[in-house]
Length: 133
Image (cartoon, rainbow, N blue to C red; front, side, top):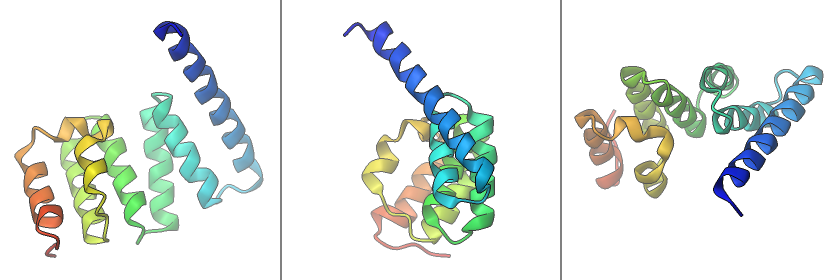
Protein backbone atom coordinates (compact mmCIF):
# COMPACT_ATOMS: atom_id res chain seq x y z
CA UNK A 1 0.00 0.00 0.00
CA UNK A 2 1.23 3.46 -0.81
CA UNK A 3 2.91 5.19 2.18
CA UNK A 4 0.73 8.29 1.97
CA UNK A 5 -2.47 6.23 2.03
CA UNK A 6 -1.17 4.11 4.93
CA UNK A 7 -0.33 7.28 6.88
CA UNK A 8 -3.79 8.73 6.22
CA UNK A 9 -5.46 5.50 7.37
CA UNK A 10 -3.33 5.50 10.52
CA UNK A 11 -4.33 9.10 11.24
CA UNK A 12 -8.02 8.26 10.83
CA UNK A 13 -7.59 5.31 13.18
CA UNK A 14 -5.79 7.42 15.77
CA UNK A 15 -8.44 10.14 15.61
CA UNK A 16 -11.21 7.57 15.96
CA UNK A 17 -9.51 5.95 18.94
CA UNK A 18 -9.07 9.35 20.61
CA UNK A 19 -12.79 10.12 20.18
CA UNK A 20 -13.84 6.74 21.58
CA UNK A 21 -11.54 7.05 24.60
CA UNK A 22 -12.59 10.65 25.27
CA UNK A 23 -16.22 9.51 25.23
CA UNK A 24 -15.42 6.69 27.66
CA UNK A 25 -13.87 9.20 30.08
CA UNK A 26 -17.13 11.13 30.28
CA UNK A 27 -18.64 8.34 32.37
CA UNK A 28 -15.50 7.63 34.43
CA UNK A 29 -13.00 10.49 34.37
CA UNK A 30 -10.46 8.68 36.57
CA UNK A 31 -10.40 5.33 34.79
CA UNK A 32 -6.69 4.53 34.77
CA UNK A 33 -6.81 2.16 31.79
CA UNK A 34 -8.79 4.56 29.62
CA UNK A 35 -6.54 7.47 30.56
CA UNK A 36 -3.44 5.39 29.85
CA UNK A 37 -4.68 4.42 26.38
CA UNK A 38 -5.85 7.96 25.68
CA UNK A 39 -2.41 9.34 26.52
CA UNK A 40 -0.84 6.88 24.09
CA UNK A 41 -3.43 7.72 21.42
CA UNK A 42 -2.79 11.46 21.80
CA UNK A 43 0.92 10.85 21.35
CA UNK A 44 0.40 8.73 18.24
CA UNK A 45 -1.84 11.50 16.87
CA UNK A 46 0.89 14.08 17.50
CA UNK A 47 -1.12 15.81 20.22
CA UNK A 48 1.80 16.00 22.65
CA UNK A 49 0.41 18.68 24.99
CA UNK A 50 -2.80 16.68 25.42
CA UNK A 51 -0.73 13.56 26.07
CA UNK A 52 1.29 15.46 28.66
CA UNK A 53 -1.92 16.52 30.44
CA UNK A 54 -3.06 12.90 30.58
CA UNK A 55 0.34 11.74 31.85
CA UNK A 56 0.14 14.27 34.68
CA UNK A 57 -3.31 12.91 35.65
CA UNK A 58 -1.94 9.37 35.61
CA UNK A 59 0.88 10.37 37.95
CA UNK A 60 -1.72 11.58 40.45
CA UNK A 61 -3.59 8.27 40.21
CA UNK A 62 -0.53 5.98 40.37
CA UNK A 63 2.51 7.91 41.61
CA UNK A 64 4.57 4.76 42.19
CA UNK A 65 4.04 3.30 38.71
CA UNK A 66 7.33 3.36 36.76
CA UNK A 67 5.62 3.10 33.36
CA UNK A 68 3.53 6.19 34.08
CA UNK A 69 6.68 8.13 34.90
CA UNK A 70 8.40 6.78 31.79
CA UNK A 71 5.47 7.92 29.64
CA UNK A 72 5.60 11.35 31.25
CA UNK A 73 9.31 11.50 30.40
CA UNK A 74 8.42 10.63 26.80
CA UNK A 75 5.82 13.38 26.57
CA UNK A 76 8.25 15.92 27.98
CA UNK A 77 10.97 14.78 25.57
CA UNK A 78 8.61 15.12 22.61
CA UNK A 79 7.97 18.70 23.72
CA UNK A 80 11.74 19.36 23.95
CA UNK A 81 11.55 19.83 27.73
CA UNK A 82 14.81 17.97 28.24
CA UNK A 83 15.58 18.73 31.88
CA UNK A 84 12.11 17.71 33.04
CA UNK A 85 12.16 14.64 30.80
CA UNK A 86 15.46 13.45 32.24
CA UNK A 87 14.18 14.01 35.78
CA UNK A 88 11.10 11.88 35.08
CA UNK A 89 13.16 9.24 33.34
CA UNK A 90 15.27 8.96 36.45
CA UNK A 91 12.15 8.66 38.61
CA UNK A 92 10.95 5.82 36.38
CA UNK A 93 14.31 4.07 36.79
CA UNK A 94 14.24 4.55 40.57
CA UNK A 95 10.79 2.95 40.60
CA UNK A 96 12.08 -0.05 38.67
CA UNK A 97 11.62 0.65 34.96
CA UNK A 98 14.20 -1.53 33.20
CA UNK A 99 13.04 -2.03 29.61
CA UNK A 100 16.51 -1.43 28.19
CA UNK A 101 15.74 -2.39 24.57
CA UNK A 102 12.72 -0.13 24.54
CA UNK A 103 14.62 2.79 26.05
CA UNK A 104 17.44 2.66 23.52
CA UNK A 105 15.06 2.44 20.54
CA UNK A 106 12.01 4.47 21.64
CA UNK A 107 11.52 7.32 19.14
CA UNK A 108 9.67 9.36 21.78
CA UNK A 109 12.90 9.97 23.67
CA UNK A 110 15.12 10.44 20.64
CA UNK A 111 15.73 14.06 21.65
CA UNK A 112 17.37 12.89 24.89
CA UNK A 113 19.94 10.55 23.38
CA UNK A 114 22.48 13.24 22.52
CA UNK A 115 22.45 14.58 26.07
CA UNK A 116 25.28 13.15 28.16
CA UNK A 117 22.92 12.96 31.16
CA UNK A 118 20.84 10.38 29.28
CA UNK A 119 23.87 8.13 28.81
CA UNK A 120 24.78 8.57 32.47
CA UNK A 121 21.28 7.57 33.57
CA UNK A 122 21.26 4.51 31.35
CA UNK A 123 24.68 3.51 32.63
CA UNK A 124 23.76 4.04 36.27
CA UNK A 125 20.40 2.30 36.25
CA UNK A 126 20.36 -0.11 33.36
CA UNK A 127 23.79 -1.18 32.23
CA UNK A 128 24.98 -1.78 35.77
CA UNK A 129 21.91 -3.85 36.61
CA UNK A 130 21.18 -1.72 39.63
CA UNK A 131 20.42 1.87 40.43
CA UNK A 132 21.40 4.19 43.18
CA UNK A 133 19.18 6.72 44.82
